[in-house]
Length: 320
Image 1 (cartoon, rainbow, N blue to C red):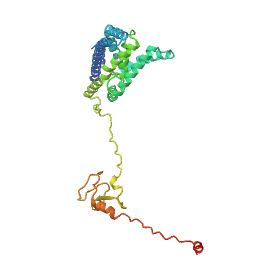
Image 2 (cartoon, helix red, strand yellow):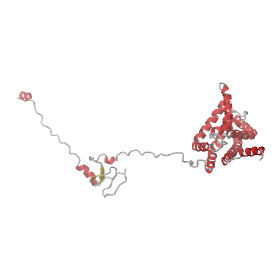
Image 3 (cartoon, rainbow, N blue to C red):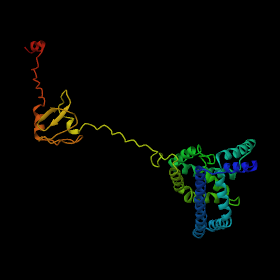
Image 4 (cartoon, rainbow, N blue to C red):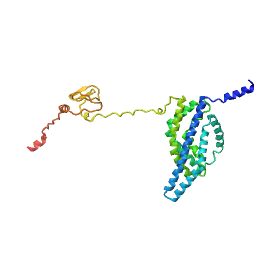
């Protein structure tokens, strides 16, 4: 074998795709296909809804605005779909490549950090943050499991994307960057409301699909969806003593009340006069022997005998 043939074989070995590389490709294709489908449904739904909103508007100004936006969506729909898909793919490159690209762009941004941010750009950032924050809270469990599995997959292949590539913020930002400049901020806000309903609110199926695909590939299968949260049983508040027993005579030792008297035992369990046990916390019904017991042990009233009033000696002398 010549040296040239050896070099070609070496290059072929370098380009061989392992099972985990195939897994990354499979996940990436699944992601882009699902997001393309969601975006296509969003744009079609937005076009139909804007037409209905134009017909149902209360005034001519709003009707004309919705109709104009509908025409813009119809005109830019292919470009929005392509740009959105392209923006998503930028997050799905290998992690090392992503870090290199954004390190250079970060240096350029630092030079312009003192420059003023435009009003439209600032309002777009607010929209992205608002919707993405709500979605991140909603899918916190799926995202935490997905990030853990992607981080573990990174130890087996260098072709996997960053573990935070699929956070809702990146997906919202991809949509914001795909909207043309011709669409005003007010109309962007309206479209973002539809995006929240038809894309951001449906990401749970996307995250579950990727998690299940990684589980099937034996990537941290012990993390089961739905098991991330721990539940604790609420503590029961101590029960106050039954009202019927508050006026009963108490002995020095804890015990139980019975129908015919008072017998030592574990406090809190009551029985009836016939010996039938009552559940803990239940109060035995009042019975005649108990009432008689109270009457028999009721302390007698003290009788105060008044002494006759003694007349002072000087009054007796004065009287005689």
